[in-house]
Image 1 (cartoon, rainbow, N blue to C red):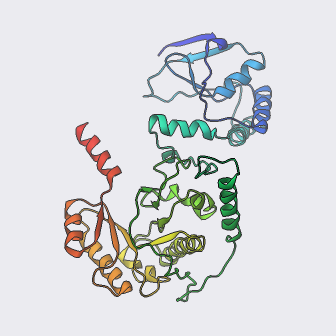
Image 2 (tube, helix red, strand yellow):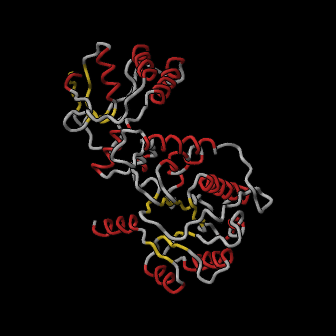
Image 3 (tube, rainbow, N blue to C red):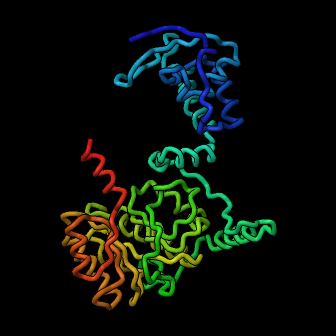
Length: 364
């Protein structure tokens, strides 16, 4: 392992640093470096360009430090910086640990423009790293001289915010799970449809969003669903909160309540809703709560080898809608699931993202 010392001026700052930093974060960083010296290491690439620690290196240099010790590695071993002058269980050691965490937290502010460019240019899914960025003002007109599009946008935002609050919606059950609005259900699957988090939140033109993704990708929507409304989408599938057989019933009920409350709120704001049927059998009856008789817009996730579960969900859709052939979409699952949908008169929509991943893995 190579170990050498170079001048700090030999390091090259990242000209596309996704973190803009903050004034408070910069203050804390300077305070920490002055009081304790360097603690955490930074990361550079093979050409001495800084991958992580741009602001640390810049601040360290501004304080008059000139040297950097470089440890070369290919990532197959962890590099630990050992401070021989500090013990953890001293006031200095504990305060350094606090300073490290406080500075990292305070000094993060995403450069949303660069993140949007990253998605477009490289296809990297920033949602994989739980990064969420705001929607821009959406313009539907080439000529915005009269600010009509912007006015519509802000009017829509204002209305959506006015609909947020601690409301009790009408309910058909003892758990206060809200009823969905039967006049706010989609008659057809309108394209394009995409999983939430598959694109930058800056992307517009998505008609339908579904949430058959990891829960962390849509968790923020329960606190702030405004960006979903302002995206311009016309319909959504209810968030598919993980509800499995091992889940205690109270916790499962809470997740059903959350997704149905959000769905009702979105309906109040003009977004049409597909009912998510993809829950464990244990919660089948609970998942019907709040879905009025005659509702006829259902969605589920198809999975190879789980045909019995799909048939059970199909029967639930029949029961609620009162129809032999309910308006039901099955998302992915492969040949067996597709054939089932063809036999029952259901719409099968291929899970293109996972199919593409499987094809890439098969070729590798």
